[in-house]
Image 1 (cartoon, helix red, strand yellow):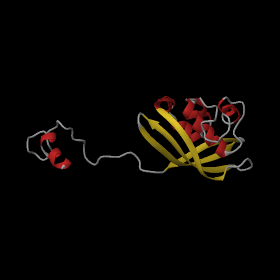
Image 2 (tube, one colour; image 1 turned 180 degrees about the vertical axis):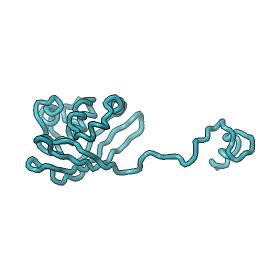
Image 3 (cartoon, rainbow, N blue to C red; image 1 turned 90 degrees about the vertical axis):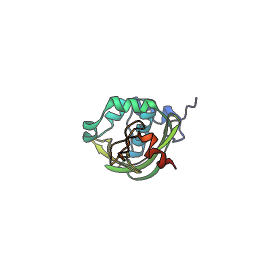
Image 4 (cartoon, rainbow, N blue to C red; image 1 turned 45 degrees about the vertical axis):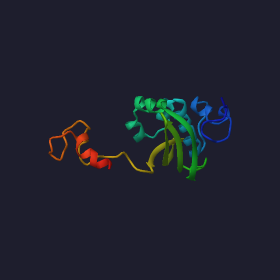
Length: 167
């Protein structure tokens, strides 16, 4: 097993994100906070995600579902695409990143632009805009293979319109 930090910085974990996750020190930049939050997901340190969130994010935070999601995934690395502000002397910052993970055999990329702000001298995650399509929403109810066909033929869907759909 590698001792490199999961965040992709190329540094050893014990000098990169581990001190943040153990609350021995605090990230000095928005980018460091973003990297440490990725590690928190990868390592299942869900309390850290809550503690490093801003007030509005905390109100909506669901620790149990976050834990389940984090544990269901194999975390394959992250890439910082762009940063704007977020330096030690700044009070706000933006970090665009791509987090790669897999659930079962399916590979995913989470592409987000995250907003950070210093509150009482400590960086916090305030909000994020996710790139890509959201969840698919059906316009009509789902028709099961064994349901009556919507065309009114009296046959099961799998023996009627489902046959013409696949052709």
